[in-house]
Length: 140
Image (cartoon, rainbow, N blue to C red; front, side, top):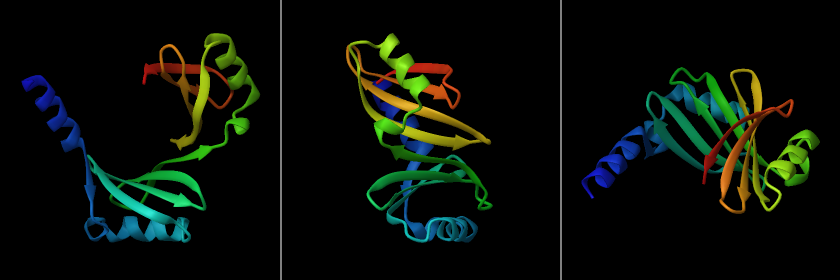
């Protein structure tokens, strides 16, 4: 039980929901300029950075900013049929009993990756590079 509480406390200290009034002006300005039509905006502090979850239309998005307002990463949900064919083929071969549940398109450090949630036995999250190369797998 003590280990559980310690791990939970550490996880909570690494990412905390915060009110937008506690987000630096440079971050809020950069976000508002990039996504003026964002709705359902929720802010989190992750270490020294600021993560914002938001919707554009009916699509979930998130972006992480440095305190200076510089964007670090951007992520959005995409329809399963927009997953590159090479990645879909690799998943079908590696997880024949699995079903693609959710696909995230991620841009960070000038590179595009895809995170795919697969329901099956067992449920896993897998990451692929934009050119279809397998990066990693984590149990869901």
